[in-house]
Length: 337
Image 1 (cartoon, rainbow, N blue to C red):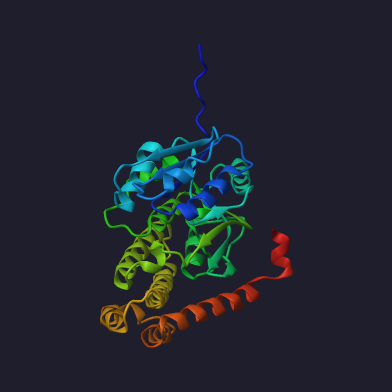
Image 2 (image 1 turned 135 degrees about the vertical axis):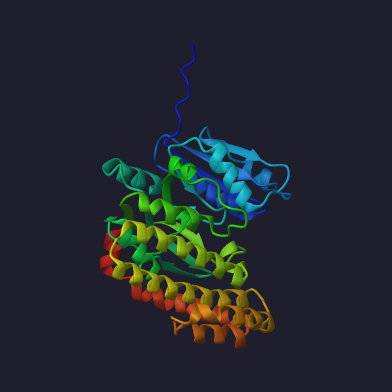
C-alpha cells in the first residue's frame, strides 16, 4: 500500500494574471527556499499571454500550477485559493511582482516552532520605488496585539503580505473577503493580529515592488480611503473589546484617524503619478476633507498632487525614498540582518 502524501508545512501561493515578465522571479524565489516540506502553488487567473509558457519552464515536485480559463475578480480568486487550494498548515501569499530571500520561510517557521502561540509572523522587507529601495519599519521579536496594532497605525510598523506567514486555519475561520475588498492583506492580518502575540524577524527577507501596475497605487482615492476607514473602525472595535481602558481606546481612535488622513493624502499623490487629472482629484478632494481634520500634514501632500506633474512627483518620491533609506539604515540595523 502506498503511504499517503504528507500535507506540506507551508504553502507559498502566487496568484498571477498576465505578468509573464514578473511571475518567473516570484516562482524562482519560492523554489529557492531552504525550508523543507513546502509547496509552491501558482494560480493563473485566466492569463491570455505567454504566462503559461513561462510557467511550463519550471519543473519541481514542490510546484503545483493551476489555471482558470477565465479571469475572475481578485477577491473571488483569493477566496477560492484560501477555501479550496491551500494544503499547508501555514501560508505565505506572494504577489507575482514580489519575491523573497532563500531563508525567509525557514526562519519564520523556526520562530513559530519556538513560540507556537504567535498569531502571525512578519519579517523585514525591502520596499522598491522604481530604482530606489527602502527598508520597512519593524518591531521587537514579540509584541502584544495592542502594542503592535497601535504601532502600526502610528506608522512605526510596516506590514507587507509578501513578508507575512499566517495559519491557514485562522484565515478560513475569519471567512471570505467581502465583495469589493481592495486590500485583502489588511483585511486578514488586522483580524489575525488579535489572536495572540505578533512575531517579527527584522532581517529584510522579502521584496515588495510599489511602482508596477499594482492595486496599491492604482486604486482611486475615495475607494482606498473608504476601505481604510472601515478597516480602522474594525481595529478600533477589536481594540475596545481587548482593552477596557477608555482613555487608551480614545487615544487609539485619534491615532487611527490621523493615519487614515495621511494615507488618503498619499493616495492623492499616487493617483497623480498614474495620470489622474487634477480636476478629477479636486472633485475627490471635496469628499475627503473630513478625513484630514486631525492630520495637518495631509494638506500639503494633496496640494502637491493637484499642482505638480506626474513625472516630477515620481522624481520626488524616489528622492524621498533615498533620504528615508539613508535615515533608516545604520551599522546597527545592518548587524540585525
